[in-house]
Image (cartoon, rainbow, N blue to C red; front, side, top):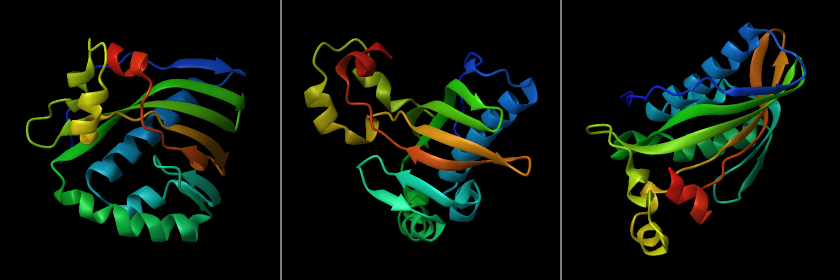
Length: 174
């Protein structure tokens, strides 16, 4: 299943100059992560990591190295195929630290597999979404940050933090 992704503006690109092909490759990389997640495909997901990567889950679990990331992913990702909720990923910002290293800020939105409704919209415009957050944890969006390294022409995750959005202002603004 591939949830419909609304038209999103091109990401903000800052830092050292980078060719458009690298910006496009980073955006395509994130689209590949989205596809792997939506299809609950651990092999496709894990193909995006360096062997020495560090991954921190949305709940704060640190995973170091591809073997540890793989063991975790192969446990938690396949059951997601039966979940009524998946997510879309949109690149908001790319900071090229060097031509071969980029920090990528992503907007991750929970979406219904049936119909493609964005679940996080229930928070928009709420003054105090705390009760809604407790009642609908599946609707809380994410704001992952990836540090990508380009090795032999291929962008891969060197480090990543997958964070849930709990900031009220960010959550309610949409």
